[in-house]
Amino acid sequence: MKHPNQAALALHAGGDLGLLARWRAGHHLAKCENCRRELAAFGAAREILPDLAAIPEVPWNRLAAEMKANIRLGLAAGECVRADDLRAPAAPLFAGARAAVAFASVIALVAAGLFLERPAPGPDAGPFQGAEVRATAHGIQVRGGGGALQFLNAGVEANDVTYTPGAQGSMRARYVDSETGYVTVTNVYAD
Image (cartoon, rainbow, N blue to C red; front, side):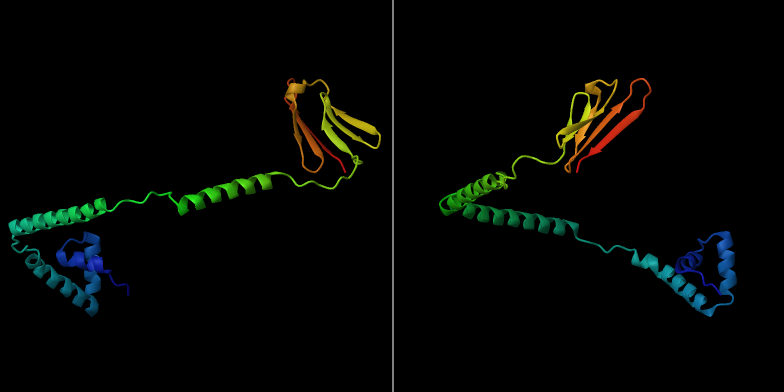
């Protein structure tokens, strides 16, 4: 047996439940004693509700006078505190030891930056013996062992080719053929 929820029972007690829902709730209430007790409790609460809604008489003029007095008292206290703050001389932010520490920190930071920016000298390995990859006016060239190999971009203007060097000895050339619209990508890796 499915019981109606609290909202449905409260609406039924006030006569505000829809026609079909009221019929279902009435059918259930005919069989369920617990739901009838809850419905009676909602009905009793509905009867005493108008008595609770009455607002007691409040002396608004007296409350307004107390609020104004409290505001004036707060403003006067603020003036007393502010007057004390104005009499005490404020210490400058960077004076004496603070200025020396700040200046020394800036100098240390600049010195560390200059030291770390300068690359450390590496061991002198002599002349380069491996393969070398470079971009030329007509394509990509690989040199090594006394010879050279060149990959040509035939019929393409040098301005239309995009060369991208890689960190591990590679080179990429990309261009779009203006007649066909085909994209050509050439990747060259050297070991």
